[in-house]
Image (cartoon, rainbow, N blue to C red; front, side, top):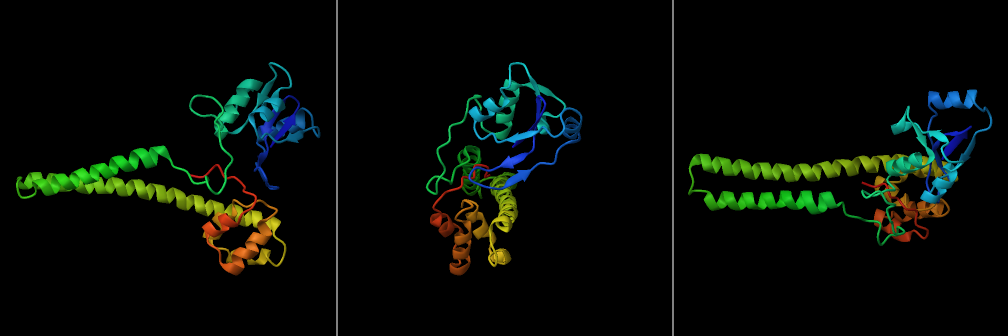
Length: 250
């Protein structure tokens, strides 16, 4: 969501697709100055969900400078440059600079692999551990004590690197789950009627992580079902009729 003042724009918040909640962003002092000095009371808001929408929103005329805070603070961009920079910052461009193609997210395809982690780090560290074990036991008793100590420490180092890779991944997932728990509790507070609202603390972290894929319309019934039947994360996902994509997962 953006606010426009004169010929300048600044980010006002984020609104997820299929959700009625807007996550507001506090205006910077520069944006407040624009609102007060240039055209007070004439700011307008609009949502930019796709590349074409964003291009149309910013295409007020060639060469009109616009301003965007955050990672581009203090810099002025022309419409096309701002559009590309913003889309790149939000993750809509792949490494080749073109619009990344995404299939509609469903229960069947919402899980995904991280190539750098699953197909590089883990195989390399696992292979290193296996070869260090083979090296240690193949030379144990046939090498000097220095060679045995060297082989042993290679084995320990390989095991430590593999453990580090897994623990780093698990820490990120745990932080993500805690953020999802907070986001969903805020969303449920605004959507659920009483007495379901008072039962939000009864939902487990696992259930809240599953409920994030449910759209606002079916959320109350799904929450009630999850509480009464003690549904797991997977069962909640399978019960969702209108899938709400989450493309920002680690």
